[in-house]
Length: 261
Image 1: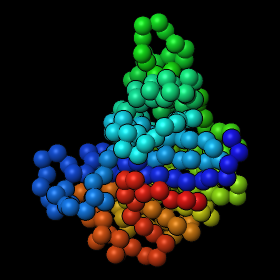
Image 2 (image 1 turned 30 degrees about the vertical axis):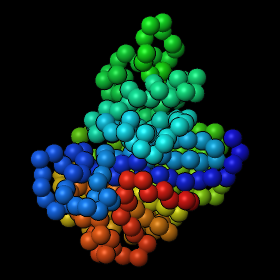
Image 3 (image 1 turned 180 degrees about the vertical axis):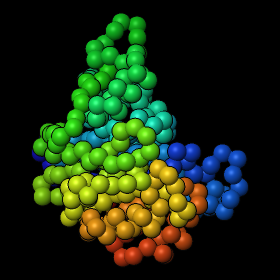
């Protein structure tokens, strides 16, 4: 794998219930703007010939079909909440397509939850059983996927372990932190100067486990990326309205958006 492609595609940009939200008739949930239709959060990175999924939400199968995801060389999990994890079983289709066990990376507590929830997963075929095949790899320090350097980024997101990731390849970089309500100075330092930053921004009203838009913008100003994108948006936020309120260099993500680094 030697090409120099570095792109990020947003497969899902919504909060845990998605948008539209079941049973809601608010202006955003009934909007005709397709950018207001948000599956649960996940991204797909194509970097130097490697194809990386970050998080497998309940919508993962639909995302893979809609956006024609044909290869997954690695899966990274940010934390073990259902909206970031419960589509993991569909990794088995990529085992079949590619004829390989897929490496899966997560921090120790997150990995323990992943293995508890999907206790039937193995690392080798078993006659008569169609299950995901995963090579589970616990990570707490920078690691490599081929020639891509990946740095786990600890953040606080309610109870339990959570992180984001920084990806570096060929003097280009992306930071991805989809869920947090507090980012330590040490993590901000690790992200400073990335080319593209993707950050949680649930809504304007305060929330106990997520950044508000204003908190996200404050954090982004410290990180100082050339381009930034808000993600994990709830139905309080209309895409066009929010876009018009943001400072230069910060944009609202939407499902299907592809960003070239």
